[in-house]
Image (cartoon, rainbow, N blue to C red; front, side, top):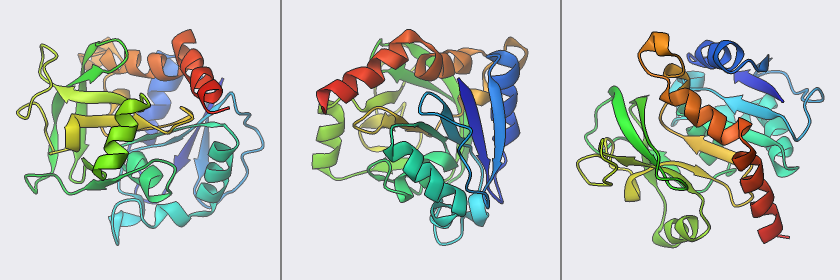
Length: 235
């Protein structure tokens, strides 16, 4: 499996992600410039990553300009053909702007930038993970029908929780509806989340829970099974 990491003007987490994938997970990584369009070196078994940062300076709104970059045209086509696409923080915002994921990311409920460790609960296996966040616009929002559909279809992958796994108002750092921290599309091949697993993927960082997130999402047989299950359900 190969990973391609798209670099936009203003990206600032692309090297963190490259380091985590290359050194902590022993994966092949290719860096991709936002003005390029060629993804011919990737197959649908590979994954394109949109990293965190402030693409195009977050002008207009987060991810709104990056969505129209030449590379994103190829990424959208890649995703629509079944290729895996993963967006973290600003990458999640770009995926929503590109309509590859439903909903939108709004200004944090407290109107402040937040940078700290939070706890996440995996909705499939109830795992509790400590992962850093660093964002000012991370409040996930969608209408009630969309939220109900996400829950019913198993598209909510992570929710903010406390250290014991309780999903509470107090454990929600940004006001995201239903404590949503990460979702996927209906087919299961496009994933977005606000927390930064690449910043917690090695014991030298004092936390390796992020490595578990990346392994679960892309490298475990469970992840492949989930994508196939979504494909069969929508056949």
